[in-house]
Image 1 (spheres, rainbow, N blue to C red):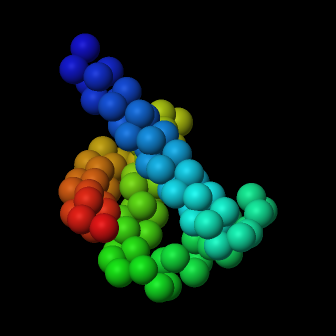
Image 2: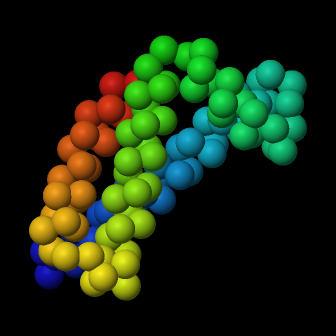
Image 3: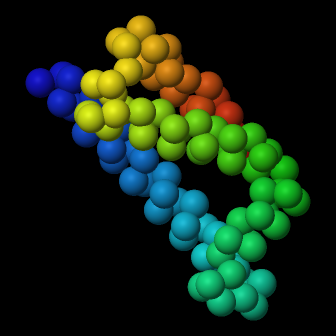
Length: 100
């Protein structure tokens, strides 16, 4: 049961991070007078100009890599030790993203 809770909390966390990034960048794009299609350009601009956003982007990328490697079929192809050590990168991802 605890393992299922852990897996579900990971899915919810990744989903909320995706929603957070998309909605914030959409808001910044609208504020800058851009359209919904300009979100990628707005994200690149925000990461380059806003303080600590570079660290947050690296942490978010790490979180996505960890999430991808934790998908059942992908995880089963990795040796347990490798997956375990990659999974520990979650702490680095949280450290990089939390204070932005």
